[in-house]
Structures are given as structure tokens and as C-alpha cells.
Image (cartoon, rainbow, N blue to C red):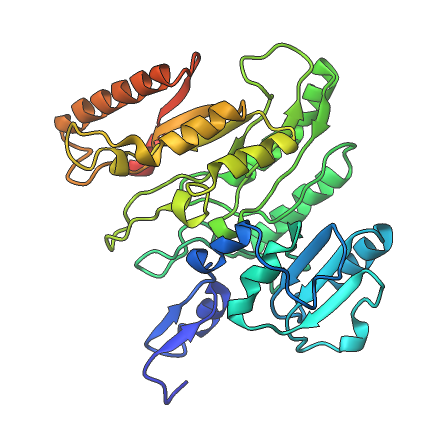
Length: 377
């Protein structure tokens, strides 16, 4: 490192460990080449060494190392011998003899980058079979200009909170606590998880629900929080389901001018119909989603709904009830939230969005006009 002019750390934890050992260290978090892997969403010609493997196929590609949850994969293969598990990638840092050896576990070895979409296209489910250990405990969203992560900061007290809440969930019938715990800079997720666990027995007692509680971490969202909760309700409610899923739809600009387009980077803006279809398969009938004002009104008073209509129509066709966020931290370029003109422009935009939804046949729309307004404080 002493001889290097610049050092790149493959993740925030490594950057945190090395940033004081060199004057020019930069964190390079994991990302996804969306354009390269997008063809995998369609049916591609079968790869020769995968063609004879039956379905359903559950696949993983990547380095098989100390992060790989060997016990979990072995248990999965044992419990479901009809499921075919396809593993692609080199085995490093661990003894290959420790890996599961079962008829339904298939090791295809390393593949070229160009070949991967074809393999993924033949899978029914993509796996991320990482153990929860020091190498995988925390996820991070886009770093800010000053080098700090946008959402979670790794600290021992977070690990302690995670363990405490997991222990509480393990003691409760019908509740599963999965993933990792983190704290937003402006939102106390610890309190949310604690309140959810405390609230569950009251729901179960008073309403008699069929409950499935799922806390799912969006690794391509690179942050932490409650991504989906499902509770099927057998009584009347203004929402289709008691709790709702949510897509991260912030699109604000960082202090360095870069805009964070999470609906685009997670792929939801590209495949809303498939996303809503998956929600239905999981029993989720209500979701938080958002409009991207900066794309819709790039010029004052001119509304281009092409970025929004596929989402609106997909939700309508899939019978998914959406609470639409009109301003999720992001607004059109040239606006100033501290000037009166912002209020007038937003009011006109909100009215235009409501008219569009009415014209599209949305009878009872729900809105979140300004998402977490304290973010601007």
C-alpha cells in the first residue's frame, strides 16, 4: 500500500479498516451490470452442461468461499431432493471436500462473464446462500461524497440489537426474524423492529390473523430496513392487506450532484409487472411505490408520464393496491424547496398525477405526498 498512488477497497468494511493506512483510499461497493444480465429475464438457449439438469433449478454463481453457507445448502438439498441446486464458480479458501455432495447438487465450475446470463435464464430461483457471519453481517447503500455510507454504520451496538431482536422473535410462535439490522441516519429502524415485535401478539390476540412476518433485506438496494411484511387479513380493512411491501424509490441528488435513482438501479422501473406478480404470489396485495417527479416534469408544466404509466398499469392489471409517493426526496431540477414556487409547482404536479390516475381507471387512489419531510431538515 505504501507504494500505491490510489487504493480501492472492495466494500465499506474493508475501506473502514484501511482508510487510515493510506491517504487515498476509496470504497468500491458491489453493484450489478443491469444491461448485461437483463437478457436472463427471457428464455435463452440452454447451456450444454445444464440442459440435462431437471427443474425446479435453484442457482448461484460467484466465488464459493468462507461466506458460503455449506450447512444450509446441504440441508436444503436433503429436505428437497426434487429441487436441483446449480452452483457456478471457483472454490477458494475452503476445502472442496467440505461441500455438499448429493445427487441434486451440481457443481458446474467457473464460467466466463459472457456466459452467465444464459445460465441464469435456465434457473427458476436465484440463490444467495451466504452464512450470517462477520463477512456478511452488514450491507451498505451508496456512499456519500464524504465517504460515509448513506444508510447503515457498522457498530457493535447494532450487532447486539440484532441478536436481541432475533432472540425475541425466536421465542414467538409464527414470527421469523431474517436479515440484518441497521439504522438510518434520519430514521430509527431499531424502534420500528421492536415495535413490530411488540405489536404482533396484540394483532394475533384481537384479530385472529393468519400471519406470515417476513423481513427481507434488498441487497441490490444496498441498505437495510423492513422490505416486505405480509399479513393476510380476514376482516374488513381499507387496504388489501394489513401490512404492505415497499419499493425504495428515492431519487434525490447527493451533495456531489449525483442523483440516486433506486427504482432504476434495482430494476423495478424496468420490470414492474413481474415485481407485482411476485407480490401476488407471496400474498401481498398492498405496496408503497413512487412517481419520479424529475423525469415526469423535466420542463415546467410539461408532463411526460412514460416513466410512470407502465408501473401504474401493471399495478392495476395485477390488482395491487399502491400508495403512491409523489415526492420521495426528489424533485425536478431547477426547483428550490425553500422558495414559494416549489409549493405551487408541486401542487400542480400532484393535481396532474391525480387526474391521470382517474383517467386510467384508478377509483380509490392513495397518496404519500411528501415522503419523510424531515429528510430535508
